[in-house]
Image 1 (tube, rainbow, N blue to C red):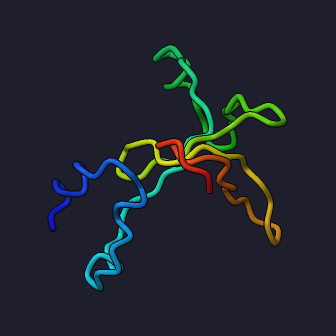
Image 2: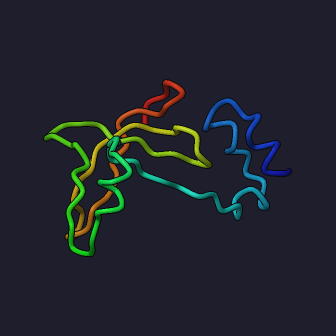
Length: 96
C-alpha cells in the first residue's frame, strides 16, 4: 500500500485492518490551534521572545490533522503537566 492509496480511504476506521505492515506505518500528526493573518512587515518584525496569539478562548476547539487532512476536532488539555489533545469528534462524523 502506498501513501497515495491511503489518501483514497474515506473513514478513519478503514485503516483498522489488523495488517501487520499497516500497524507499523507512521503518519505525520499536526494539531492546529488557531490562525492569524499578519502583514509581511509584522512577520518580519518578529523577534525571539515575542508572543504570537493563537486566538484560543476557553472552550475553543482545535483540529488534529493527519497528512494535512482534518481527522478530529477536540480541545487542548493538560495531562501530567504537558499539553495534550482530547478528541471530541472524528472529522468523518464518528464519535471517539
